[in-house]
Image (tube, rainbow, N blue to C red):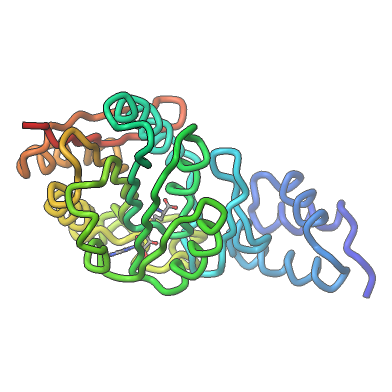
Length: 270
Ligand SMILES: C[S@@+](CC[C@H](N)C(=O)[O-])C[C@H]1O[C@@H](n2cnc3c(N)ncnc32)[C@H](O)[C@@H]1O
């Protein structure tokens, strides 16, 4: 089989509506091991599969995170949750005995990207637990978290967590699905057709899973510990109120450059 040339791949991608056709072509040519594989990869991309799924990995916080078909592709804006968490862990570290690891919980972990990135960022021992309801995500997260020694559990939010974690979690990260159900139909095809409904759907106002995470957080957080979730700009005030209603102090954090909004809740120490 004759290998597709760079120019032909660029033309095919551009015709299919890929905005960064040149960059994508370079990546596809570098990733394919044979002419046949390149053709198959270009066909998949042209049919609308996310580039990260086609090549099998996404860059997140400077790391290469493996992505399997059907697993949510971590977005660059979500790096903000990791950066904010890392800053908070520095403060936690000041009061924890130096030989104790920081316990991190990544709920709705998808590929496991957030927990892995946080563990890799921190200059301290981390005990990482990651949970997802979707078996494909769990399998993918297990491979990604292996280098940092994380434990990945399958189940509904906190249902599979071991009892000994109660009151011990220092940072709870949860990039939950937060798209209002009625809006999913107007999302770009890449997400709408290739990322499962369970990764996107947050119920009528997009905040159903977030409400459940807020309700469970106080059970698992250590005194003074933090829970961080991503929301849209429009949801932020309502989400903050949800956190406060369960007894957490809460603030909205914004990163204008990455167009990211996060709610940071804290369990006030007695
Ligand atoms: C928006 S994706 C985020 C994935 C990952 N945290 C990231 O940012 O790349 C939401 C994830 O939540 C998972 N999920 C949805 N409902 C869940 C539930 N009730 N319990 C556990 N995981 C859930 C989905 O399978 C999906 O992987």
